[in-house]
Length: 166
Image (cartoon, rainbow, N blue to C red; front, side, top):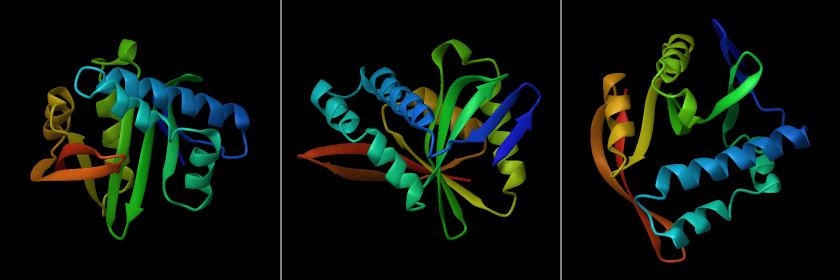
């Protein structure tokens, strides 16, 4: 799927391209470190990062577990999106825009286009309960709080998230 929005586009990752897979794994690791350093213990972040390897990411795509997309400005990657379709719900697993590109309306533009293309779908996102900025962003986009989730991620680690839907 390629979605054009002026100079921004969403482009499906090519699972056969080692370069794209490598770039995505680097971005995901950066995402975990930047997003969670202030709210999670370092060992939990390292545990999450331990699952971000080329083969793991490629396998997720190959088995159809999710759709991984680059967010590009002109031809430069400025973020990524991980979506998972379950029945009539599209779950936003990860949505990340590089720090220097935030607060410029890019996230809103990207989400609005995804909503427009998938008009008949419902959307869901789980956000760490301590990520106030992310919660505020998705509430502004029409998402409603549904319930709190305690997610076991392994090694006696838990994430406390809030579930939102649109």
